[in-house]
Length: 246
Image (cartoon, rainbow, N blue to C red; front, top):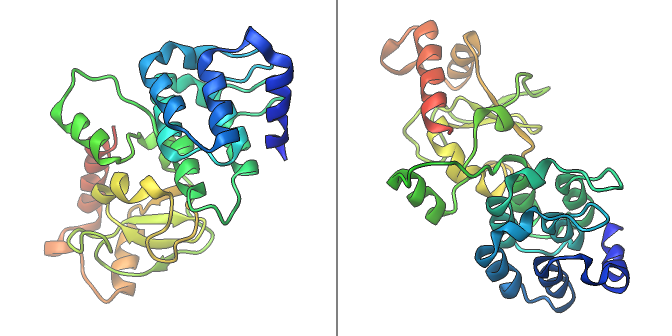
C-alpha cells in the first residue's frame, strides 16, 4: 500500500517540504487534521509546491488513506491543478486515494467524489456560490461529471427525482445505472459520491437523451410533464444543465 511511504517523507525529505506537507504528515500519524486544514487556509500557496518526489500536499493527504473530506476540499480549493498532477511515480491524487482509502471507510466515496468533480469557481463573490460552498455542495462542471456513454444497464426507479420528488428524473448513475436524479439535485446529492438508491459508489453521471427520456417515463407509467414533446424536453434539460452545473 502507498501509505507506507509516509515514513520515507519524514526520514528523507527534511526541509525540502513545506510546512503544509509536514502538517499533513502529522495528521496521518496523530489523527489530528486541524493543523493541516488551518495551514492550507492560512498559506494556500504552499499547496502549489511539490516536494522532490513530485508530491503536493494533496498527494500526501491521499497517500494517508485517512485524511477527512474537509482537508481534501481545502487543498483542492487552494491549488486545483494538483488534482491533475502526477508525482514522479506517475500517480495522481485520485489514483492514490482509490488505492489507499479502504472500501469500508465511510469517507472513501466522498473523498473520491471531491477528487473527481470538485472544482472551485472563480467568481465575484456571488451569493449563490458562497451559499453553495457553505452547504458543502459540489462545485463542478458538466465536462468532468457527465459522460457520453450510458451505463451498460439502466433502471427506471422513479419518474420523479428521488430527492426533491418534484422534477423529472433524467440522470443515471454510473456504473449502477439507476435513473433517480434531476439536474438540480446533482450538486447536493453527489457530494457524498453515492447513488441515493443503492448507496454504491458513483464514478460518472449520464443524462438521458431524446427518446431515452420518453422510454424512461413509459417504464414508470408516466407521461412527460404537461405533454411536452420529447425534442423540446431534451432542449430544456440541456439549458438546465448549462445553468445549474458551473
